Structures are given as C-alpha cells and as structure tokens.
Length: 386
Image 1 (cartoon, rainbow, N blue to C red):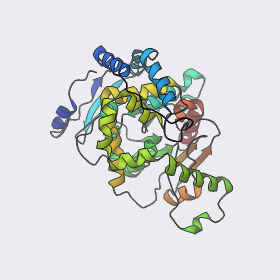
Image 2 (image 1 turned 180 degrees about the vertical axis):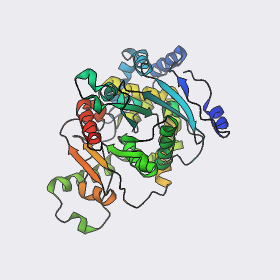
Image 3 (image 1 turned 90 degrees about the vertical axis):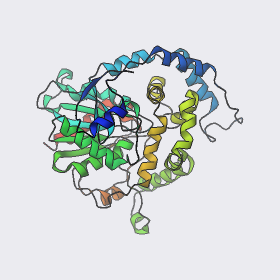
Image 4 (image 1 turned 90 degrees about the horizontal axis):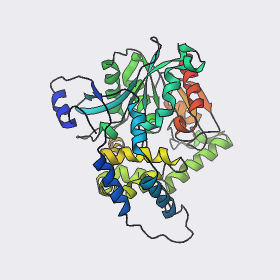
C-alpha cells in the first residue's frame, strides 16, 4: 500500500500542529498477495468432533470452503479498484493516522454525514449505499435528500491502524471525528453508525454539540439496569429479545470477553495465520456472501491490524462512559436477524428519540444486506430535521 508518510511520522508532525489532509490510494504489493496464497496453502487444519455443527464454534468445513474460495476464486484487485473508485485521504488527529473516504455529492447544499463501521467490519460496510446517498437525483430521487459522505476507518482498523498508544475508546474516536469534520469545513453534520459505530456515533452527538444535526444508528445498545420494575408490562416480543440477548452473550460472546481482556494474546494467532483470522472474524459474518466476508477479512490481513482493531474492546471496557442521557435527535433503523433494540431501555439513555423503525429484512450489516431500506430510513430521518 502507498501513502505519503508513515503513521509514526504523522504522529510526530501532528505534535507540531500538522493538520494536512493527504490524498491516499490503496496499492497492495503483489508480494503480499503471493505470501497470503502460500500461507493458505500451508494451513494446518484442526480436527473437529462429528455432528457438532456450530455448537463448538465455526465449523471446519465452513472455514475450509471459504479458504478455498479465498485462495482460488476471490480477486482482491477487483475490490481494491472498487475502493479506489472513491476519493481517499489520510490526516493526523490526536497523534493518530486517520484514513477516510470523502465522497462529496454533486448537490452543493447536501447534508454532511460521517459514517462509522464496526468490528469485524470495515469501510466496506458502506460501499453499497454511497452512490444512493450522495446522488439521489440520478436515481429519480429528491436532490434535497443528498449527502456529502465521510467514511473513516476507525483508529486501529485498516489504513487508520495500528494505534500507537492507549485510550482509543468510543469517546476519543468521537472527538477525532468532530475534529475531522471541522478540518473538512463541515460546521453542521449528522452521524450514522452500525455495530461499534452505534456506540461511537451517539458520542459524536455528545461531543459535537450544536454542530451535530442528529444521529442515526442501526442498534441502540441499552440494556436492563437490574431494576425488576423495568420488565413490568414489557411486550412479549421485547421479553423474547432480552432472552435472546442473554443467550447470545452466554453462547456467542467469547470474542467480546477475549478482546476486552486479552487482545494482545489473541493478536499473535490473528496476525500470523490467515485461516486463524478468517475463523475468528467469520463467527460474526456468517451467512453473508463470500466476497463481502473476505474483503473485510483482507483489510485486516493486509494492514496487519487484527490485533490493534481488537484493542477497541479493551479500551472501551476500561473507559468511564457518560451516565447522563443524550438529548440530540436520535433515529433507529432496526433490522431483522440482528440485536433487537428495546425502546423502554433506550428511552432511559436517550431522551430525544425522534424516529424508531423496525424492519423484518436485512441483518446486522444492513448497509450491505438491505441498502435501499437503510438509505430510505436515513433520508427520512434527516429530512425530518431540516
């Protein structure tokens, strides 16, 4: 990959007030791709108990199938070109290299948005919504619904990584995002988030103050407080959602615990073995199409950021988070086959929820799985705030 300076150089120059925004283009050396192919060829596969399916973790045959396609069917150059079709930049904020797509709408009065991805995702999460959000006129839509898009790689992830010091939790990321938007000349803007982005974007609303028009997320992670009265009169659907959430953390939450406690211990395996990285990341990418899975995994592999990306769980677990409710306009678009946000708990933590829509389709990666529905919900939310 090519860039004008190293993250270490950028950190040093930032201390002297460097706010330069540098053009960036992804250019992975062929030797990196050859090394990956060789490592895939040399995979040492584990054994597996018969008939256990997903109960012990990601099944062997599933990972073998993905790895075979990765080795002989997947084409990184196609996805590299797709990413490079959009303007990319790097800048240094708070000592950290920050990589981002910056796609301006042809409509000069478009509303600026900053979109934040999650783990084990990347900026690839949003590729399928860029054109519709930036240029509705070309699709027969209302040009007033157009957005200028800023899509950063979270510090520690992809070409924003690795992080070089402690403390990059959701609030510090949000502070970096408000500085990024200021640096780009956006005085009033919205924030959109999924997964980790659904934690970061509300913090953008907190720290951005009057600059933030509103925040739109695909999950509101508000959980029971422990007060039994919170469950009185709760709908059957919400009770079921609480039970499902409890089941998820007890049966599929190992990644959260490991990354919040021992991210460095995990990093050795993820950085050295592509199939190890694939198996770890695909536990939360299952049932998605192979190219989407592998492009996200490739970004972690090629940038050597699987370990630094995992650190966000540690940093966020150890941080103190604001306890007061938010007051900015908040919108939710919840999708099927995802965590179900529960309005009663959400209204305890967010006092100005102005839009709440739930859809039966899609999934955790709605921008990829149901892009038209998500685009429509984002447009309607910000239209209501004009």
